[in-house]
Length: 135
Image (tube, helix red, strand yellow):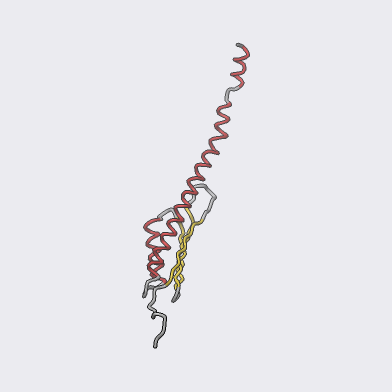
């Protein structure tokens, strides 16, 4: 009985030591999971804004400025704090329109700066004559 009491006294504080070592690791793991979920969400926001801007910029009579304005409106509506410092680039030619939206993802883990981006591309709408014989 005396040996059992001595053994129980020797183990005192081991649960506290284990708790001090394990809890910070678990908290960091939880924060990393939240951080990467925010990156995933920010990518979807950037892709949505790029698709909306493409739909606007590729129409006949529209300009690259119209596409940029639409992307900014979409970002303002969806990503007030998730996608910070957003950038929008619209390249519109007579045959192809490309929109790139990117930004920095809100940081949950201090010191971790991650970026998210989305790209959409499609043909520019224009009036064409049917190909074939014109006799």
